[in-house]
Amino acid sequence: MSAAKNFVPRALKMSQGAILSTPLPSAPVATTSLPEAQFRAKAFFREICREMPWIMKTYNLSEVTTIVDIRSQLAEKFREVQTQEYKVVDLLIFKAQAELTNILGHHFQRHHLITKYVDQNYAVNVLQKGPRKSAFLNAFYKGEI
Image (cartoon, rainbow, N blue to C red; front, side, top):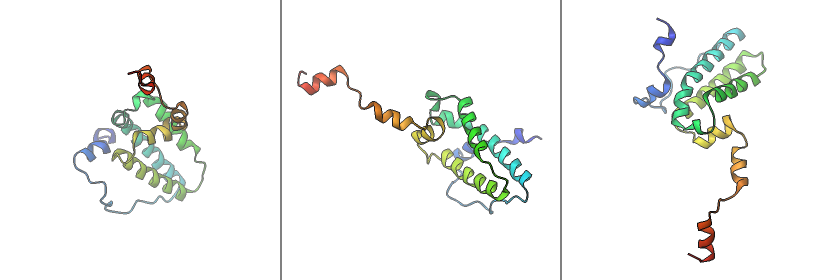
């Protein structure tokens, strides 16, 4: 059987009662060479891409972006890492796995994902616009209603 047929999204496992706060049964596996670390990074990227439709649906991100855009943003973050040290790659994979677990466990809020992966200026743009005032509120504040 291929790995794709046996794939069960983490989100599905979590919804069936998996507890996130329990430690893993063993320590993370350390790689022994750069090609192995690169292979693990690519495999992890594919795992994230498989989880992306669930994340988009759960966090309602389709209002602000598409799966293609967020995958390309994620691929860019992977490409930003320019290192030849396999231990550094291992560490970054470990940190990214922890972040994915937090996202799938709803420990992130929607605006965190938007600010980090969709639009870094999202919070700034929302704050600069200021409060919206309607004609009703203007009349209410003036005491006309």
